Length: 303
Length: 294
Image (cartoon, rainbow over all chains, first blue to last red; front, side):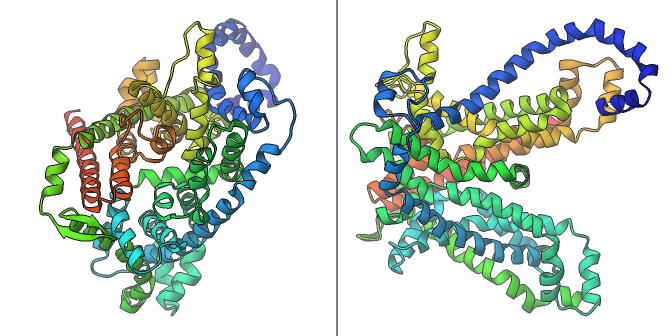
């Protein structure tokens, strides 16, 4: 509405001016005052949301002495990267590497098999597909705790314990229900005629999937991939269960154990470690926030 | 064409890998886990059949009941508050900020993508009382209130967990519900306005009833997530003080991996699953009844 009025005003400023000016004079200050409480509330809310991040960032440059003797709002006395150096000296580089080694293969496999399954369940016509879809859906609700102990036994018996495989395999299994379900939903929004036309043109179903279906849901695959990335990257439960040595720790498990490595809390390094672990997801959000918001909310409404 | 779209071999090729992985790593372990509930032991010492002992133990175990109670209380308070806060935000976005809400939506949403472990460690410091006075206690001191030892009492720890959860998730629920409120047809709001309904009356009579479906799915999503709370508890309070903030998820984890009782651990996991099912059905039922009454 505001866009419309300004557009009209710019076309015919004289005609509208006499009408609008008195209105503004009468309603202006009162309207401003009426809106003031909500504005203040909103400002406080934004400070509460953003301040912890600012505090974390500033804290990552402070020394132990500054933490113990200065009030929390003091600025760091120097911008030295000493705390960050100590974080990486404590194995954080390895933790980040472990997270990458575990998360990306899981992501690739879950997307490839999940998209194919979504296609088979939604586009193709066969008996029992409703049941199979329900079977996948059930996995969204069952807590991961239900599968941890048998999986521990399986990995132990097959000698996979102590490798990256337990984490990768478990991420694939826990990621599949949502991926399959979201992909099925996306395929549902593609008009069936497209696939029917491509089969009439003589394409086999596998070709239809590869050459017609996949390009159509390319953006959806990216969105689902983003959502799953956050789930895998931020996971603690599975990583904690299947890392039995420091060499396997992911970034979350490493961070959890970080404060425990010293006798007293080393504030600066702890803040730097938090900043490092937050950095990745925050940067992704900075650039892709619209897709992330769309993906995360789509993954829940239907789930 | 139907022969092509129903090609059995293609179904096998496309669905096979996903179904195989899912069955082996998800479905088989779920059934297997049920088998563990009547066993005692762990993979290293072996398993022995012990009938319903695990269930009897569960019902006579004060720590288990304390965990059940904490889980339910946390899930209930967290769900109500985060959906309410999210709904408030969504109304703010739609009716107050309107087109200008995009930036604020994006800012308030961001904490949901951060790792909970990192947020929890940050909140430990935010609420710290000693040796350093964190921002929260400093603020209380400023108002003339003495520093609170937030992690020293069960009650205070509970509320720090809730506040942290709210900080992390309210922007998410704000956006989730925003889409639902936005779907309310403009004509219905306009005709209600012409009838003289404005402000709270408009919200109560038109907006709230029309956003019930999206509120319902938010509630179900929220209760299912909060009943499974794990990361934030482990990183913020580690279940303490004592076991006052230990949910079923953490109790299951400790029972299984600290004490090596796989049978009892599986029983606790099963109880958690039943709890999730019960709550989902309960919300479904109670809201459906309300809808028919209207």
